[in-house]
Length: 311
Image (cartoon, rainbow, N blue to C red; front, side):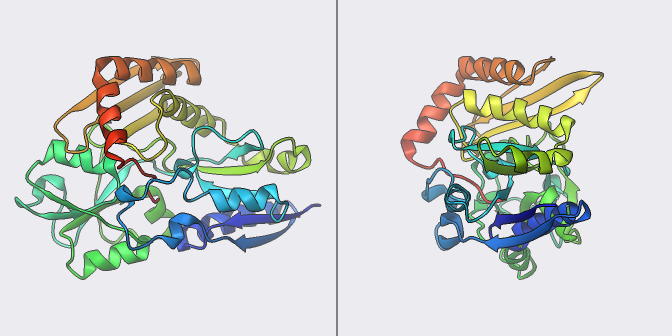
């Protein structure tokens, strides 16, 4: 059996993900080590993500270790991975997907509708901010950085009336005590790839690819390929106010997607069914652009606030 070295960020969630993959590989008889790699996104903690703007800020250093042969595979939250991978790398597996939706967390309030006027809500995601503002223009949206524990601690301390987080991270860490509402995808469209783990390897490393093949989930691969094709068509990384959520319905792939103005003044929605994940993603992306998404995205890029979000 092989000796495999995993590259991972050092956050609690990233390490849970790396250890989860490590355990599955060990069950197959492999020897596994985890190397913690600090990324640009981990080093910049005192600036709102909407002001940073580095593509691949949570993956670049890990990819460098992969290219140098220091690690054999990298475990990422798929939504952190740029839609266009360098030719030096490939995604060997996308594991079975955790719940891709966003959740509303609060000590006092049961859901978005229950929040009083002017309530403070924490999120560093333009996508979440835009959709919240569209639902509730009266809310005050404030930046929220840090790992899951830090964000929940700030909520507990009363710095926010509510925070919006990904269901997947909280479920994986078993930190669901403050979850009051799982937000339906038609109310808050998730980020492309949210809830899915991607295992990245060096391009052409067929031995490692073979060792990881059992982890690849066909349904997760199809849905996230569709979402990322849409994102790619719109020219965005995970950093722009774009939502994309694909799932199988009655034997067809169904894609719901949005492009939104960060202030929530305009939200363009589109949904469609199809068989080919890439064609479906590109077709819905093209429609969104034609219906005004291009103008929204040009404005966002022009303001220099397009940035990757933290899982």
